[in-house]
Image (cartoon, rainbow, N blue to C red; front, side, top):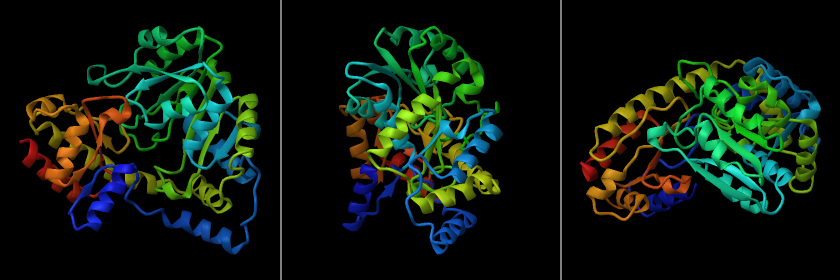
Length: 376
């Protein structure tokens, strides 16, 4: 978001800057979802709702978990929040006491470690680079766990890498976690439907159902329905933990927006063809961008299984240009190529770059031409 704001500021100064920083679909919210929000306004559904979400939305979420993931929840196991970011924060505050540890695989979504710190916990970073396919091994997870570990974050498909764990890989991680009954697992499935691997998407609860009494399955409508500004995230989890998270939310923001909740019911219960259309476009952009990045000297990029991010290793390009680090490379590309992207160090992965392809193919092609002029 900071990179996007900087790009907008530079454009206002007359610079022709291409912004590849934002994790936000360039598509409009589908018409039937917008219509549901408008109808809610006209019907006067503008009052407070239950802190943890309307019954209608909870039922839609329960049906989604059953339909898409084979997971069963009751209404008292569902919490609706002001975006999945709040859901993740609620988990940290509910689970962590001062000095407790939370395991975070890296590269990670930028907010996980700081949320843990805000909850007075200590993030334990477990790196997995391009040689590991950006996925931690059971051995690495086991080595990171101590008697102070209370929480583990998993994100699949991953922001920023696009990597996704297979069912067998999740099962293997689950076997490690089964040996530690005091650990809660927050599995962030936000990009579940922006996915194109051959093997179907699997959530941790489906791969390792024995862990269901300790898994918080996190999702939302922002990415796959192009509803980032509507701010609706949700989760399913064990009743006692969900009740604690509800109590925290009740003393912070209270209920999510009533209009957004009504629109989210339409999103989850309605025709999913709009999602498939967006995913086809994201896949086309992914295929172009990964191939194009790999043709630029000094950049090495793995194909992703989903999301709308590419995460090339830029170590050779940094060295070839005599730069200090990935932040310096990002500054070079902004200043000389007028392309704004995010250095990998923001995600716990120094030496990498994150490029969002949540923009048109022509924009990506022009961005690549500019990057190639500077690095080629």
